[in-house]
Length: 114
Image (cartoon, rainbow, N blue to C red; front, side, top):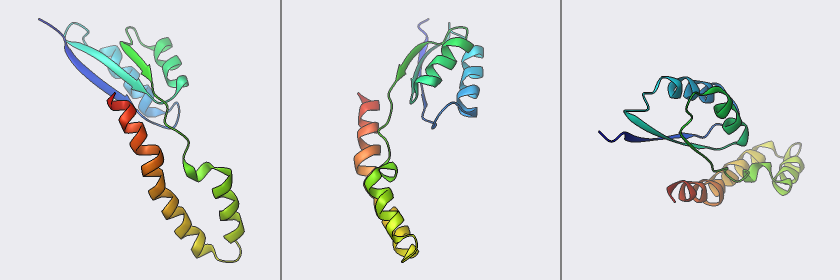
């Protein structure tokens, strides 16, 4: 019988409990029944899984782009409104969050699909 292909997408911000849980799951997954394909968002997750799993399966790292909220320009704008109009800074963060969907999230989902 051909093994069932299963895709695991681990998209946490670094090495965390979800990566450790995935590692535990992979160690108990019957490789004769399931063919694991794992997509990770960070290189340190890959290193951890390679070192901690018996048979890690097919590993791929697809890192998302940095959030626009982390950009120097956005940080400078937020700093300028921090004292004068903090409410405006919150609105700017909401707009940047929406832009993140277009600039960061959708391209990341597209790369996961391909």
